[in-house]
Length: 354
Image 1 (cartoon, helix red, strand yellow):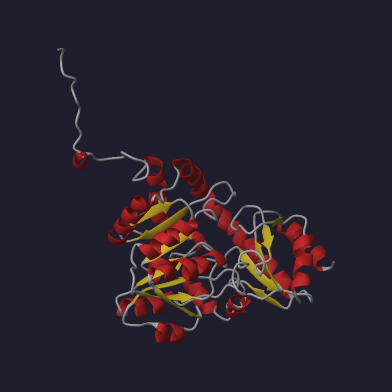
Image 2: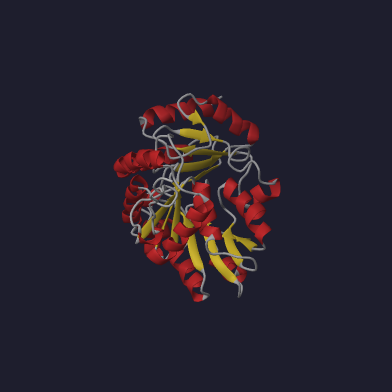
């Protein structure tokens, strides 16, 4: 009859290390350790995109019957996710001003489990008081989750000011070169273990190739942010002096109404500037008229970009939703890169003059 074949058996519960990339990967783990160090966190978990990181922050900790208090000043896709996806699962959401702590206090309920915001807001630079919000959240047993994409872990460490989880779109400044997509969450070992389990179950893993690219972005992150923050401040100050510009929104400006809070929470003003001109037609003339700025909705790259939030980043929102978030037709958003700042100013000057 012949000899029976030998079968090898594994007892999977005894296997340690990197066994399956959806669960863990050495390159991704190296990236996670770098971000955890920058954020001042016990652990970080990388995901496929920034939006998948936000998804994990919500659905790891929420279930039907829970309540969320969210800033109304968010990236347009995040607004769509919260209003159209999160609410489908029987989770109630209240929207408030990011800067008015009294609105947050009035909105919380007995079943509030999570407070969510981005600070500074995109693209208006509204800054929330993280320590006050952390006190509010922890007083009712809720989590405070902060989207840190606009500043990156170099520009802000929300955990140091009481946040439970810091979320970033690594696609933005962490990469810095428009090459790959990714997201990352940072927090305590206890919370991140739960996030990792959710991400593994739902297939939200970051590609190891993307993790490798992002690791190279981390190497230059502090140098890039220092220069881009400096360029952005000079451009914002120049825009304030232009007669065609009705308002400038940039957290690095000395006359920002929240300057004291910004100095406390941020390591610089960031890379994003919002400014308003007369109307949508005037905004489109600026966007269409630039020659050095790339016309794209992405931000954080070494190359400067420009976009019209009313029709791009917030384009899927209803007009009343946009206006409630102070996104108006005449608003233009800049993400300032590494180019010579004099050339960028000259480019904006000729575009505004058209």
